[in-house]
Image 1 (cartoon, rainbow, N blue to C red):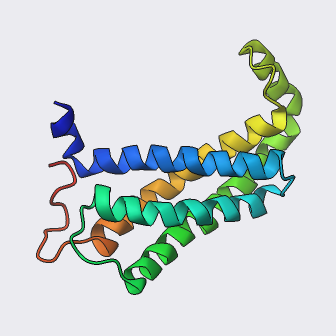
Image 2 (image 1 turned 135 degrees about the horizontal axis):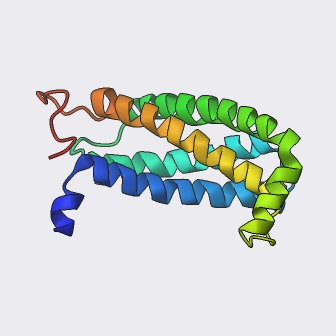
Amino acid sequence: MLKKLWDVRLTRFAAIGVFNTLFDLTILNVLVFVGHVPYVAANLVSASISMSVSYFLNHHLVFRSKEQHSLTRFAHFFVVTGLGILGIQSLVIYGVTHLLAPHHASIASLIHTLHLSRLSVRAFELNIAKIAAVLTAMTWNFTIYHFVIFKKPNEQPDEDILL
């Protein structure tokens, strides 16, 4: 049953997306809370690193591309993903953190209620914003990857998403 589930392109995309998101979040949190890098700048660095890893994982595991790696394909992937991650995610992170900023007391209370006392309000805001940003960009990325970047020659546009 797991093999059949893994044969579904959307399942592979989601699994790789979760891995890549955790990888990205780890880098982001280290940069912000250890390196004291501002949110958006830290996101640009963490996203750029995770985008490079994402290209290879999507090429080999998600879309099972038989084509050789090429600078052109990587550039297309980087532009599409860059727009999703660097553009869309940065805007969502900026927007969500600014929307949450006036609610520090409520967030602190929620953190206390959930027994997450080791988590700061700033960390909570950043990670909520990043998760919202990832979900927004993920929709954009899969659509463009499937229909443009990793489209197989002679493949119908909706073939192999759920098969």
